[in-house]
Amino acid sequence: MPKPTRRRLAFLGAAGLAVAIAVAGATYASAADQAARPGVAVAAAPATFAHPGVFVSRAQLDFVRGKVQANAQPWKAAYDQMMGSKYASLSRTPKPRAIVECGSYSNPNYGCTDEREDAIAAYTLSLAWYVTRDSRYAEKAIAIMDAWSATIKDHTNSNAPLQTGWAGSSWPRAAEIIRYTYSSWPNQGRFASMLRTVYLPKVINGSSSNGNWELSMTEAAIGISVFLEDRASWDTAMAKFRARVPAYLYVTADGSYPKGIGSRDTKAEIIEYWQGQTTFVDGISQETCRDFTHTGYGISAISHVAETTRIQGQDIYPEIADRLRHALGFHSKYQLGEAAPSWLCGGRLTLGLGPITEVGYNALHNRMGIAMSNTQRLTEQSRPAGSNNLFVAWETLTHADNPA
Image (cartoon, rainbow, N blue to C red; front, side, top):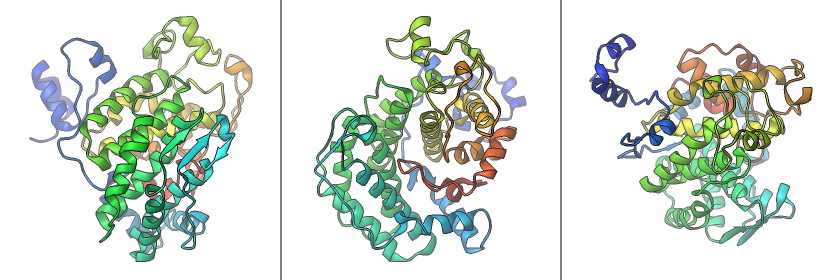
């Protein structure tokens, strides 16, 4: 059955419309709203998972490899940036710990930075392997993943859920590329066991903290679910995601104030949760008045989850496009230098959005044709986008103008 056009959809009627949307692979009504209505089902996990299928697909990787080999920009500059980083070093020595202890703002920091950076390194090396076909990069990625899977038992202290989410977002990206494009990884079963027993239990049930926590944790849970081919955990994580996104990014269609989350459902509770902000406009985030850095973490995780759903044949971008485009444009405008009005965070913004716009911009502007002038300007002047040293890395390389 061909993908339906809008004109054809108008004549299908209610039943036909539901079928057509399912065939098209997009749910245009909010699934969070659907879930609240009795008798309306939300799409379940893919019957068959696509691999490699966490954040980057084989087609996307092939696009990147072709551009780098052709010395095309901005991909070649982004590739050179990645290969010149510490994360691509073939002499890297992993630093696994049995117990990673991370307090608030990583104080104490017992293995927190080491774990996150080793996970980013594994992903970086897997990308280097795919582009170069030099087996040394694949073997180094495997050595790092094997070192951690042989050692780690738990994450502890107050930042344990967030730490697990950050590292747990990078590990499956690396593991998917290596498992499905490299010839041999004898200990992949042990790595899968690590993800299932050490990481998944910490992230699958979400968080009542600031939204970037739950969104990063959900990204990890979704990626792990793909690697493990765990449909139940996918469904659980997607339900968390669909509830959290509308409670993190506001659009005027929500009403006079944002949607609640968990027990925070009165106007006073929501305003307090939104850092005291009382005026709401399209694109403002629950953490905008905290700072742009943490807001960037949340927006980035949303984009990452959406990329994975698209690869898995359950493209969630149409469902979240309005929120995501407004959020990217709103924050890009101020990151570019526009002065904050007095109604916004008391006229004082703490900037530092980070290298997080490439993925959403490519999906919404290049694939879906949405005009995004502020986001485009910020994205293009920030290239090549590097790493935030937590869970974001090399997104100009992987997603700039990538049609796949």
